[in-house]
Amino acid sequence: MLMKKSLFICCFVFLASLVAMPLLAAQGDAVPTSEPFTGKVLVEGLDAPWGAIWSPDGHLWVTEREGKRLIDVDPATGAKTTLLEIDEVKTGPQHEGLLGLALAPDFKTSGLIYLTYTYLDGKDEKHKIVRAKYDPAAKKFGEPEDILVGIPAGSDHQGGRLLFGPDGNLYLTKGELGHNQGANRCKPNEAQTLPTAEQVAAKDWSAYVGKVLRIKPDGGIPDDNPEINGVRSHVFTVGHRNPQGLLFIGDQLFSVEQGPSTDDELNHLESGGNYGWPLIAGYIDDQAYAYIDWSKVDGCDKIAGDVYIPADQPSVKETSQDKSKFKEPVRTFYTVPTTYNFKDPKFGQLSYLGWATIAPSSLDYYPPDGPIKAWQNSILISSLKNGAIYRVPLSGDQKQAQGDITKYFHTPNRYRQVLVSQDGKKIYVLTDKAGNGLDENGLPNQTMKNPGAIFVFEYAPQAAPAK
Image (cartoon, rainbow, N blue to C red):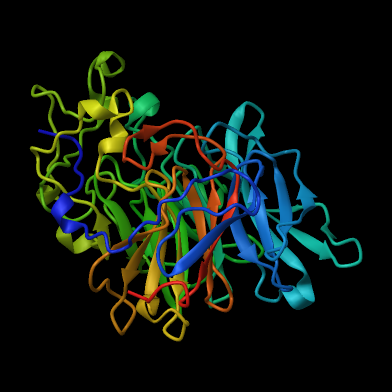
């Protein structure tokens, strides 16, 4: 039995034609794009850009995960200035540092921005949310104030997207810290563990991993949060692996999360919903994924790898789960049979790059009235592994995926966030500072062509007919 699943190649339709041109890591240089778009490097040399939002004056406010800074980037010139530095931030090679950000809904009067990051509490790594007030005279933010502290953190799967909803509450994605896989394989996965009333009373948030949280602006628990197993906490939804994107379309909340070696998910989040991990990946289909609790396997630390389940070890099939407690994804990337080859030799030691997942890292919405007609009413998803943007058309009620998935703007980089311009004519993309991905030929690439950059892809219908 395989532990994980991936892609049926035939299920994926590439509609975007790529323009071959050299990719140069220099501000203002052109980058490969898809018709009818032009592309360029807006800014480079950022210290692991992670999150971005539009400021009230139309600039990009960007967090640098390793740089521990919030910066302002002029979308016209690429000029950047520092708005806030936070020395307390604990950084790491990929998942730790300064992560998501969100403007308070009343920013024009309050001047408040909310940020989330990892930090050290003694020797323990934790995750917190803070807020800071903008000083328009100094054009900087003041000292951050703690809002919610003591959320568990670790070296893997931090989650970290932050978003205000139309209800005025703050939403935070929280990964399950990569437990039950890789270097953390022998640690129990607690994405299904729920907080007790005693823990909530003691402000013990240790059960908050693998969840999406819903938080009052002052850090409190909203009165209308779901009661799950009779306990009301900050927990809004349960059973997530590494959710790194959050998006409201009207009052509908969507997320994307990274799957194992199969079934990245686009989810429609509902209050109190259970999204299955680690018992279910993607749909309940018993294909290439089955769950094994490595923390209960004798000699766990001596078994090589965790993709294939040894024949003598018990595993849990997806179809054994209670379907009534499970919320299906809107779409997966992708599902494969048990015969899928997870060790394609052309990927060498980076075999995971050959799996059918795309490692989604963010999402944004292209509205029904946007100038790019073919993109109207679509969700855009950034991919770390493939260095591309995936477009998922939605149904008229904006609740379900509809039609083919389309891939755009592939470059030999890792795309950390996608952001649509306010006029709908440009697509901005943040790239990782380092990591592994796929090059122009679909082969492993350990050197990013544009580390720590922001790309801008501009709709240019005069350059080529829209497709």
